[in-house]
Image (cartoon, rainbow, N blue to C red; front, side, top):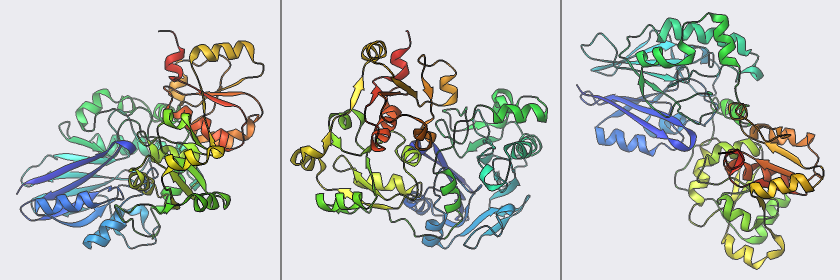
Length: 458
């Protein structure tokens, strides 16, 4: 018997998934897969494994999971915690608390751990002949340095206080009952909106988390509820969409498929029909010239997540991409369930050069220019689009705090005629926000080069 436990870390979504199996018996499971599943299939083949079950630790809100794609490719069953029973459009295997899944020399044990969601589970991994567990896959219940946020189900009739109390019990009575040497493999790392204090590390131990995780320190249930519910960033706009989509039967993602190449007239016909232009080039290139009405979300960053904050899931998207990146842009959008991509503009650089009347440059201000503008221009609106933890360390005087995930709604409370300057920490999110406001009809919008990091005294 040889334990196979491989972590797959998708940095652009801070998402971790797992292949767990026994190389002797040839049986395996995949836990919390991303939607493009070829890597699991290729590795299972290389290890001599057959994937029996796809285990989902809960209904994910931050990405569209690959359970349907893997099941179609392998014939694997799809397993969820008992509270998921009756909530899916497809057949599931109900994984009750204490359920043991025998892979031969490797045994998995299910722990029901409600709190982040009602159906949340963790999966304990045992090696044959060993009494103590090797590892626990904690989903969104326990992260490295944090715990799952309990506030995402308010729209489904669950209060954050109710979920936080369940989480307190799950952590204390289930996970902290495991031996300190048990390795901890979570479903997310730093940057994920599923928590507020996630570490850049992707593996830890129960003992280390017992010592260092603020949410696992000795405290009453009331203290825990208070500490885990305060300071959470606004959930990205697409979260409720993805959580529901993960329960539904849907079309399977086809990997490597390029979006339709759109000629100039076809591109603008789609825009006239209501499509949103998403320009995935980097902010500097976007600022030098972009199509009127574009929203800029650079592909090098957290592209899918931020598209999901400034584009509604019901919107059709047309892409403007650096040439050769069209497939990557489509794939990343598919990972959050944004499949309504009508196509990508063919030869965008050439097209923009040929149609200068449809091209605009973006105003980007240095800190010196912003100070001058604040002193000489009347009625400037300054908007800070950083998260709660970031603004707690300081803001530009007089700035209005509008989290990026709330921008489409909060824009209704801003004056589209007022000169507006947007900033974030370094300049990536401010380009997203500024371009979104322009696409909504704001007439004079700039963003701050270098963000608050450039503004504050060194």
